[in-house]
Image (cartoon, rainbow over the protein chains, first blue to last red):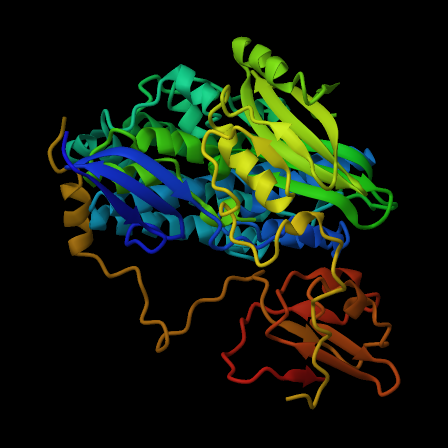
Length: 359
Length: 130
Length: 109
C-alpha cells in the first residue's frame, strides 16, 4: 500500500466548464476514494417561486440551465397544465417535441465536443462544435433564441413553425445529419478514442439502478429506461425505441449519446410529417391548485419537478431534481478505483451540468 | 393525464423498512423532496420501476424535524439527505456521507424554511438616476 | 479498429475557407425572427402599463401622466411577453441585438 494523498479537483479545472469540486484520495496513480462537493453557485431558484407568479416563472425555469433550457420550460409547463387540467392543442405538443429533440441534438453535440476536449482531441472538439453551431442556427431561426428558446408557455407554444420554414429545417437537418455521421464515426471507431473510453468507469446494471443513475448513464448500463416512453408531448404518436448499451463503460455511454443524435433527427422527421395544422395555444385562466410530479427526459436524463399550487398565483413549492444531481453518486462510484488520468474523462462521461444541479 | 402517481402515506418509523422493500423489488430512488406547508414539513420519497411512480409521504414539524437515513439502503440518498438538512434543517440520523451542513454554502442557515423576505428585486431605476 | 479516423475530415478542411468570421470587422449575419432589442412605436402607445405589469424582469416603466415609456436595456431579457400582451401591438422585437454600453441608463421614449 502506497501513501495516500488527497488531490483537490476543481472547482476551477481546464476540463470543467462549471464548478464542481472533488477531493480525490489517491494511492500512487490510483484513485481510491472521491468526495464530491457542490454548492458553489447555488442560486435558490426554488425559493424564487414565492415571488414570481406561475406564468412568469416559466422564464426562470428556462434559465435553470443554459443547455436544456427548453426542456426545463416544457417540464414546468407540463406540470402546471396537468394541475390545471389544461388540454393543449396537438400542434403545440408537436412543436414542443421538435424543439425538445433539437435541443437534445445540440446538447449531445456539445457534450461530444467537451468529451473530445477532455481526452485531448482538440480538432475533433472544434469540428463537433462547428456542427453544433448549425443546429443553433436552426434553433435561432425557429424560436428566436440560440440558447434560451423562450418558446414554451403555460397553455401551449408561443411561436409557430410555418410549413415553408419546416421544409427548410428538414433540409438543413439532412446536411447536419451527414456531418454528424462523419463525427460519430470518429467517436465510435477511432482507436485513440476507443483507447481512452473502453472499459473505463464500468457501472453494472444493478449498480446503475441502486445508485439512481438517469439518462444515458443508466441506458449505457443496459437499462432501457427513457422518460419519453411516458408519452408526454407527442411521443405517444411517434415510433421510437429507447437506446441502451450493455457494457456500462464510458464507451457505451458515448455510444448511447451518439445513437440518440440520429434517433432525435428521426423523431423530428416523424413529428414534422405528422404535425397537424391548427391552434398553438389555449387561453389560461385561474390559478393552479394541486400537486404534480412532472417528469421529462432531458438530454442528460430524467428531470423531476414537484409543483404544488395553493390556488393563488404564486406556487407553494417548486422543486427541481435535475439529472446531474442524480448522476453525482454514480460518478463518485466510478471514480473510486480509476486511474488519475481518467478522472476528467469520467467526470465528463455523466455529462455534468452543474448549473442545473445548483438551481 | 401523463401518468398515474401513487402516493402512499408512511410513518417515519417504518420508512426504512418500507424503503428496503422497494429496493428488493428493484425500484430506483428518484428523489427526496421537502415541502414547507405552514408550520409543517412534508417529506416525499419517490421511487420508480419501469416508469411506475411510487411516492412515500409523511409530515414532520417545521422545527426539529428528524428522520432516519435511507442511505444505508440506497447509497445515493446521501445527496438528497444533505440537501434537506442544509436547506430545511431536517436532521437526518445515520447519513452515509454526512457533510454536516456544508453541502450547500448558503448565506443564511436553512433558507427554505424562512418566511419569504420582502421583494428583494430593486424597483427599476427612474430616469435621471445615476 | 481504425487508426486516425479523422484524417479525411482534416484533409478536406485544410483546403476550405474557415467557417469562423472576423467578427468585429465583419458583422454577424442576423437571422430573421431572432429575438433581440425591444422596439416601440411610441405614436401608437396608449400608456396602458400592461407591458410594465407583465414584464418578468421589471425592465419597463410606464409613466401614465407624462406619457413617457422607459426601458432598462440591461434588464430586458427579450422574452417577448410584452409584445404578446400589448393591446395596440406597438411593441416588437427586432433582430438587432444592440450595442454594448458602459452605463446603466433608462432609455426614454
